[in-house]
Every structure is written in structure tokens, then in C-alpha cells.
Image 1 (tube, one colour):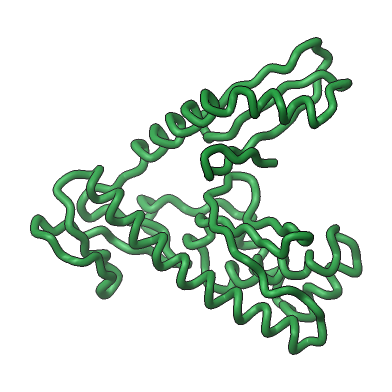
Image 2 (image 1 turned 180 degrees about the vertical axis):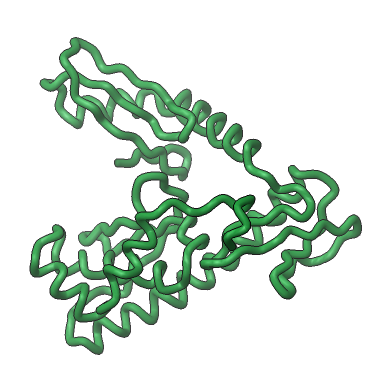
Amino acid sequence: MELEYNGKPLEYRIERKKMKHIRVRVKTDGIIHVSAPHSAPESEIFNFLLAHAAELAELTERANAQRRQAQDFSDHSRHHWLGGSITLQWHPTPRPTALVDGELCLYARSEEEAYHACRQWMITECTALYTRLNREVYTAFRNAGYTVPYARIQIKEMTTRWGSCTADSGRISMNFRLMQYPLECIRSVFCHEYAHFLHQNHSRAFYTVLLSVCPDYEEWDAILKKPLMSMDSGTR
């Protein structure tokens, strides 16, 4: 579930417990964890979070910043990218960020500069790819005879889901972290979310639709359920 503050989504989870008051904490994953009495309605919990949104946004950003710092953006560091890997190549003079033969050449004199240059390039590439896949999957569903809307795509960095569909508004949220996986894995998530426009559940009818458009869905979904190997393992 999400709460929006200053145009940014704040992801939260609710755990019901035997207690009298609502308690909230932000963990290192950047997610707001809510402990609430069994009797507390969701509207009360939402209003509680809304009242403390400014403080929670600050704590969430702090957790996300600490997690970024734990990542390695040093010169020659390797990163998962579309089922393979890319290697950062720092350059001390200004230049456009570009991927050349598996090396992401960027202007950076520190890990902080490398992080921002790398991140901006990745977001641009992700936006272009998701836009293309959205059109392709929409066309595939229409060609298969299904009446679905052309989805409005929102890119997020989620920790618990690869995607989500809001059928009423015709919106699909896609996880930025999918860019670490093979292209077909990303396409399979698009298909999964588009199938939710027709069935807002995971019933047999839902999977009938999904598999008719994405017959290899289970193969790609199995890859997404496995943790990525470390870049230090030498396996990629």
C-alpha cells in the first residue's frame, strides 16, 4: 500500500497485533511498517500516517540514502543490467554517459557523482524500454481479442512487488529494479499486470488470459523468484 506525500509515494505495510495504539517505524528497506490493533480501520491508519507524512518521508529518504551509500559505484564496479552486467568506467572530463561494449562510460570524480550519472542514465533507459514494452504488450492483448486500456505507466523502486495494476484508473506501476533482469522477464510482468485489467485476482481465468498472451510466463517468473548472484561471484 502507498501514501503520497509531495508527489512521492511512501510504501507501507500493516501488521495487525494485540495492542491498543498504532505504532510506526521505518526499516532499513525504506518501507514504513505499521503495527495496528485488530479493531483499527484502515482509514484510521491512513489518516495517522498522513498526519505524520512529513516525518515519515524524511525517515524514508534517510533509509534510502543509507542504502545507496552501501552500493558500490566505484570506478570499474559491475552492475546487473538486463540479464547481464555493465561495468562503470569513470572519466575525469565532462562527457555524455554512454554504454560502449558493456562499459558505461560516464563523467565522475567521486562515487557520489558516479551514482547520480549512472542513475540518470538508467532511468532514461528504463523509461524508454518500459514505454516500448507497454505499447507492445497492449498491442498483443488487443490482437488476442482482449479489450484493455492503453496503460499509463508509473516507474517505481519497490521492494515487495515487480508491478501492480490499478484497473479503475488504467494505471500500471512497474518496478525499476526489473532492469537488472532479462528483457523477457520484464515483458512477462507487463503481461501479468495487463491481465489484471481483465481479472483483478489470480484465478484460473486470470492465468488463462495471461498464458494465452505470454505462454512462457512461468519460465520467466521463476527467474524473478531467484535472488540475483553477487557481481563478485564471477557468474555473470
